Length: 231
Length: 312
Image (cartoon, rainbow over all chains, first blue to last red; front, side, top):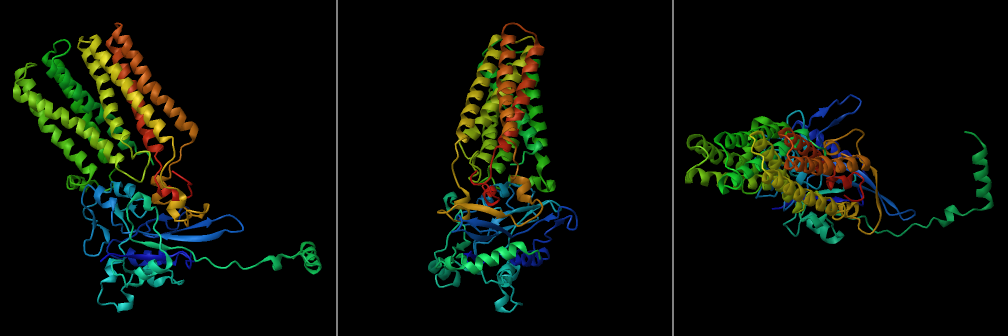
């Protein structure tokens, strides 16, 4: 098995719900807490397993806002595991999930240096490295109904932009999506072979806006009135 | 990269210590230069082991969870950090056998002592190489991911060590032209290597914001990082010194690290006092400290691409 996520950059609205759900579940999970530093102070900061960044792709008028949520990619060639001197970082052979054994970590930050995706964050309070577990304490939990045996970020996504599954299974939903939508990997040139795959935004027909913008006599008067009249 | 003071102090002092030890073994075993008294050999050895040990103690300073530091010997098979730790510890028993031989037999040590000394010297070079490879093996930082990184670590250790050797020798009134001459040559080789390194990293290569975000056929600009305050990633990788600062530091590296020590050692060659040699060591160590600071400050981790950098 090669478990991982597919993230649809077409439908992701950048609402950060996945990050919040992740924080909520994992702060009381096996690698919790996800410590916050001065949560009510001036510069609230803390440990997150999932971060969403927002980009502008292309130049006006052919530009687009793209939201990119990023968590651990559970790479096939995970350098974070091989550089770890203590053996605290490991990749599970049975499902490919990369985890940190909190009892062995000495907090040297070396794995975070080796990770190109910024997936690992040191918990300054606990002195150990923390990272996405793919909700390993959830996806195998028989006590949960089958539809809830998924990572918290996937279940919560209101845009249904996140998918969880086995990339080794060619008939799984994630494999099918990658195949049909032309899934892409981040920084493939570094050779980490990340499992998590991103679906590029769909190419849609441009909606003509010329008529909306056209300067008619009525619209010119309207524009002038709008400028003159204070609200 | 955020330059951690503990790591700078560690690599500079233990680097000089390993370099000093290698030179001691070469001068002592090969018998080149004037004959050394027992006291002088011991002074070199104690100096080397002192620098190495103080450096290794500094190295634990950047660990967030020191009680697990002993576990760093566990992944010798894959991790250069683990290899460095193992070789650094393995060095001590061989250095101890060598030291004991000198203590018991004087400068004319037996075969066992010689073999131990040779193995310890080889291990010293391997430790320096491992330290360099800790950084050199990281594909995420193009400024480090070059063969020049371990080469620099070895050569800077040897160069500072050779200056320390000349200083200790001159304290024993044994400062020959050869000691200072060797130190000058080593400093100049190290300076050339460092110059090549700075030339090498000035050319931009590797991933860009485009390959990082997967949009290879359009311009990509960061709109928002999604957090209002700093994060672990921005603290660790977001270090951004001004061009002016790095240029000044670079001038300092060449001036204090190589040129001034070489000139001071040249004065020793011309018959200046032992104090001049110690000044050369102090200057070289400060210069190499600046070099180590720059090594971190100029290293641009690819995660910066996600925070808005167009290239590393």
